[in-house]
Image 1 (tube, one colour):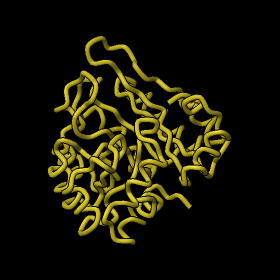
Image 2: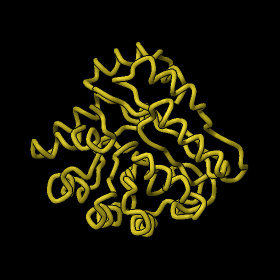
Image 3: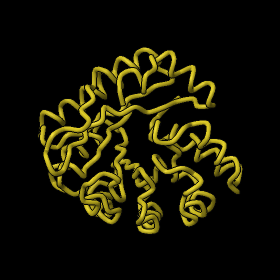
Image 4: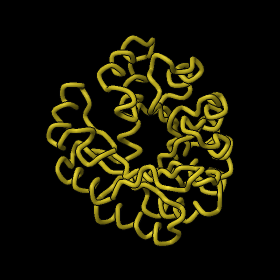
Amino acid sequence: MESRLVGRTAGEFVDYMNDSGVDVVLVPSVKMRAYNTGRMIWDVPDQEVAELTAAAPDRIMGLCGINPTEGMDGVRRLERCIRDAKFVGAHLHTYGFGIPLNDRRYYPYYAKCVEMDVPIVMQVGHSAELMPSHLGRPILLDEIALDMPELKIVAAHTGWPWVEELIALAWKHRNIFIGTSAHHPRYWDQDLLRFANGRGRGKVLFGTDFPVVEYGEALQAIEELDLKPDARDLLLGGAARTLFKIG
């Protein structure tokens, strides 16, 4: 994600959000490394995201990207992002770093999220890039949630192709939520839809990973789904507002 939000200034992007019917977006300072070469593919500066959030504080909110190679310096950076720049959570893309989600090197970051009372959004499921997918298997969240029941986890990208595995964990643990980012509603797994519409109401959060999925097109597709009104409201923002403490 670039500071101009894919060719737009913050003001222009807010206009685009208005046209698309979107109230709030979460923008991560993404830290993504190439698995084979070790070079950073994405290393968005926290300051760029902070400038965006400052330009539209009620509409654009930041997530602090985690790079586990930074060690405790990275934990302190996470704290500064939340305390000083008012970021509302953390973001993790683990695959390129070559370590699984439940690796001990992440636990200081997880503990800091608990201490600061913010969620962590992490890609869970396969990696679309040429990186080992098993590092993001949903079952790895089981151990994390058992060790840290206060850590609020948003498992993004629906957990596909292990959607049923992720649903089981979201049902089991009150602190695990499922994010839909990067998956068009037209292709959501039917088990996920049933979960969002039934016993998992409030546990599934809408996202797009823009520009992977366009806002307006995705929202129109959701309107065509057979969702109960309360389930739709929770999916489209009600649950996320509570989780991320968005007024």
